[in-house]
Amino acid sequence: MSTSLKKNVWILTIAQALMMSAASLVVFVGGIVGAKLAPEETLSTLPVASIVIGTAIATVPVAMTMKALGRKKTFLLFAILGILAAFLAAYSITNGSFILFCISSGLIGVMIASTNHFRFAAMESVEIKDMPKAASTVLLGGIAAAFIGPEIAVYGKNLFKSEFSGSFILLAVLFTIGFLIILLFQNTTIKQDKGQSKGRPLWKIISQPVFLVAVAGAMFGYAIMSFIMTATPVSMHTMDGHSLHHTKWVIQSHIVSMFVPSLIVPFIIARIGVPKLMYGGLLAYILCIAVALNGHDLWNYWMSLILLGIGWNFLFVGGTSLLPLSYKPEEKFRVQAVNELMVFSTQAAAALSAGYVVYHLGWEIVLWINLPVMLVPLGALINYQISSKE
Image (cartoon, one colour):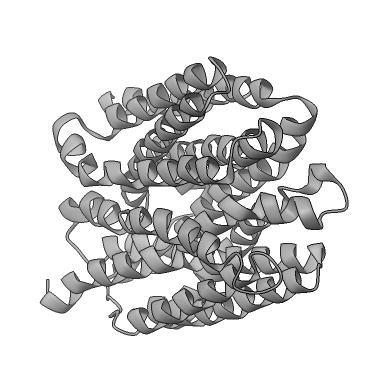
């Protein structure tokens, strides 16, 4: 493996820190801005849901674009879209347009659909044994993104007359820097078996226990995390009256906890394996719900959101690490597209419903709903382990 290819992982990690700042920014202020612009309060989290919906809708087109143009050109193309979307968000806030704000958030989500392939591009730049480490390293960029997004949100809040419009102008600047960083990325070439150029039928691939557990871990790990996280600023700041500063701190702590475990996850996988890591993720989710149900104090929100982030990391990294075991090189774009579509469509549904549930049914119901949902990845894990022993 050449030195230039090794650099890909670090290039993508830096780009991840810049581009994914959009997610933490929108999660932090999307519901707050939405509450001011929306025609009714139950729609306040729609901008947050829109970023996930945009990601879900774009998953297949992004994968097909990468198949046609390659990773690098696709990353650059969608980075430009992100820059334009950030300016549109600033414009929509200035003009008080809730619809335009949701559209701009959705377009940022489309860009994120491209950014989500950073982990696959990094894994393709290393040997098979180093794939979990490469994926975890790229996700470490999320630590920086956890701070950058909310900080530019607060810093840009009063830059202009309309609150938070300046935040999205600063986001456009970050996207521009990210574009320049991606220019340093080098496409990788994976050898394909000429006799298997078309790959297997899709149904045969997705029926494999390894594919099912990979998708279930990432899909429900993301859905549960998104559902609780999206409802948190509304419950904490709007309904319980905690300060914007404390709400920002909780969201930042949560996002940091999503990515800090990536520092040790490769070592955990090497010691106990991916399935046990994913069981640990489900346990973290159960503890998250238990702590959150115990009260509405700042400590409850903070600790539960940290546990939520850890649970997400274990399930998502575990699922991502197993996914390449389900496909051959010539099948990668199809399988990755299906994986991303399933993961982010489910996340979109979770984020979209979070506002309604928290306003009409309350914070406690937001939490309780997730317990039966966890049975799906649990069942997939058990099935995978049974099939592996056969």
